[in-house]
Amino acid sequence: MKALLGRPFMDWRDKSPDVIAHYGGIGDETCGRFWVPVPFTDLKFCVIASCGGGWDHVSVSLVTRCPTWEEMSFIKHVFFEENEWAVEYHPTADKNLSLAPYCLHLWRPIVAYLPRPPAWMVAPANALSETPGAKMAR
Image (tube, rainbow, N blue to C red; front, side, top):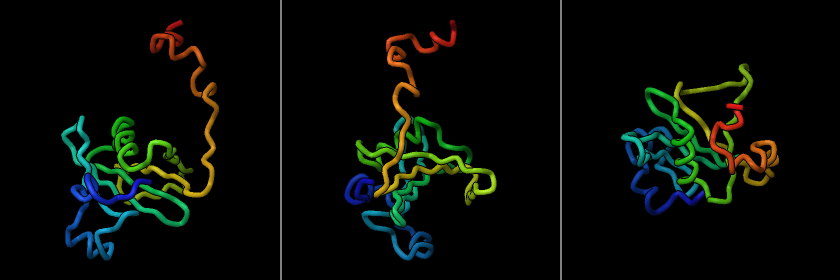
């Protein structure tokens, strides 16, 4: 995860008394609560970033709906380095813990390798040269 210091992070960092009372401070280069404006929306997203237990973690929430793929991609780009992969886990029903109904999470193991499927399983090599949806229409 990026160091959460300087701009834009200090502009977005929540320094309210509520945050200080709840977390004991406003955070540091590894953690904090932020109000992040997403340029292609009129919204500010509540983002809580943390690092510990071998994981980088970012939770992203809105009051009335879940963030979209595009919004999560923007937040991932802002909080993680370009060469870092991050994932959203979809737990089993009995392990699905949630404090907020419209919150999604990005996770990155710090020391472990994050396995990924080979590119050919995601999209065939010639898929990029075809018109979107062309294979489905055949």
